[in-house]
Amino acid sequence: MLNDCSKTALITGASGGIGSACVRQFLRAGWQVSITALPGLALERLGGPDVLVVPGDITSEQVRRDVVEQTLVRYGRIDVLVNNAGVGLYASPTGVQLDLMSRLLEINVLAALAMAQAVIPTMRCAGSGSIVNVGSVAAFSSLPWAAAYCASKSALHSLSDALRRELRTDRIHVMKVCPGIVDTDFRSNVLGGVVPARVASIRSVVTPEAVAAAILNGVETRRQTVYVPEIGRLFRLVEFVSPRLMDWYIRGLAASADSTPGSKTSLDQQPQ
Image (tube, rainbow, N blue to C red; front, side):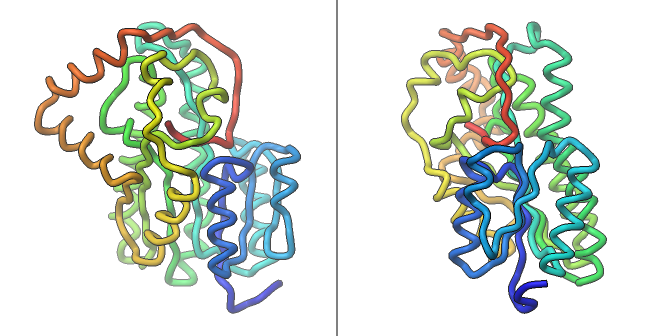
């Protein structure tokens, strides 16, 4: 067991994008870090004296059990779980392949909930802890070219709110993170389909480092919801106040949509 007085963060989907940025952010803040993602050189390179690497598919019950148990053996505690692992799928609701949607929900929703269930007993015993679920502003404004992805993030947000209310008396902090378009390889690592041309041309993005910094700050200040960038709040407001205005905006973006099925997969990138 290392550095008993140091806090420990367990981060899923840590080999790239927001996940690897979180690793660096927490390490700079003096935390010990445990990470998991699909096996690969990018994941191995993150290893170090304060970084435990447990490769594997987060949808596997055995992998989830291993990463939690090995983290507790090495560090003796889990102060924060960052549920970052996620995957995209570009397809309309009428054309989405249900087997791909099932896989997406398994990764984006069920695995995140299962990881939370795995660490909650430890946090309850400690009387503290934080569970961070990386969602998306797309959860608030359903996009016809990414229907399954939006549905998965909406489900994750709902679970986050339910967990927050359930665990309040246990002094376990639950926070959902709502990034906008993040500068990662997300668009080229999806279960299928391609992003609409007009959406692909949007360059108003935030860096993974900005999202990671917001996550750490949100943990330290125990915020309920974090938007990165803050303008993400506007999407939620417009959807609530004027759904027709949001329909008009999305219709323009969807004009060039192409939902041709694909076959690429990734568990390590996050929402755009």
